[in-house]
Image (cartoon, rainbow, N blue to C red):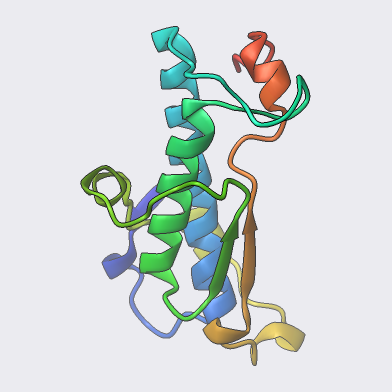
Length: 141
């Protein structure tokens, strides 16, 4: 289940707020991956061998993930796997989701992590793990 960021209320630790955004954004990215697969137009690009492919799904999912997380956690460092993605486009802005996971927000941040600040966070994004299998139709779930 996802909820709007504005409805979470109260003080939410940076880590839990960002984690809840990551879960909601990952769910939305999954929809993007399934939609691209269903369209039949994967837009496959060879980045240097059969095991180094990129699809339209990789780029679109990374746009959604990185742009959304940049909005949720602007002080965090976010690094995407795909290096030829332009985050300053109308398409990128249109993919942004401000939802968070209510399930994550129901949990308390562990005491030893409560001092983590947003600017301490580094988020590595691999929008589609298993692109080769995806292009072969193996990741339809």
